[in-house]
Length: 340
Image 1 (cartoon, rainbow, N blue to C red):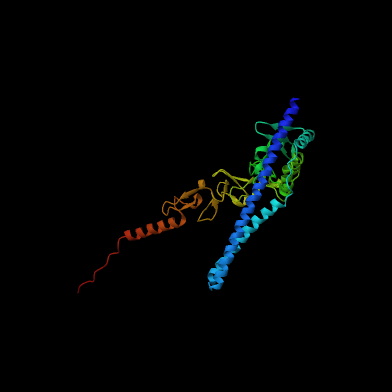
Image 2 (image 1 turned 45 degrees about the vertical axis):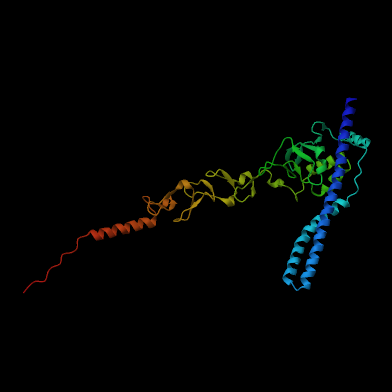
């Protein structure tokens, strides 16, 4: 008896959500219709401006009208497409309470872990552990939010939650190739899933979501399976495997082989941003293997400095010393001319 009461309560919640969804669809159609009408009125005004500009010989003004119409056409086409999509769907008939109870009984038979939370007004189904190409992603909870049904045409009223997450190395928010931040990439199944929710076919909806989770589409993943266990290069963003990553000890980040090098003096791995090219020998070195010339104050690798001087400054200092020595030598004595 208690179970039957709970089932009826759940069915009433679903029935209320579906009624709100139908109302939301009609309001969305009304909004899009008003939007199309407003843009059509603007097009009529543009037509009048264009006629007046041509009649009075204002060719520059006429061209401006054409440019404006051209820009507006792209926007108008988008809104017209959304409007056609809404009115092109079959009329939504709210099922009866008996139909919904029958649907819920079917879900109990179809799914082992089926749960209703009356406080949150959510229906959830837990999948088996998902494995794609030998990579395990664990089980997922598909949680349908009945209070968010009226937002179906703006956002998804459900979440796909990883219970034992194995996220992508490059992004912890991606818990499945087709799930990011608990949002499913529905792909070609978007229209079918939306229609199933509109018609109260909850069992079909959950089955379609599970179908997306159990199948990998290599054409539209958030992160491909090939890159799942890799890491993202801090510089270029490319994903590389753990065996091909290089850690820079100076900035504490990971890099790919194209964005990293090694110090020619101490063999330490450094990224290109932390590496310094010695202006004398041209070799990349880390900061620890550099020093500043005492005279010109330019940075060099330590091997290119002699007694704290670079080669040019050392030669210049030697020339200065030689010049000082020459200037300090006594002048030769001059014998005066003899007299008579």
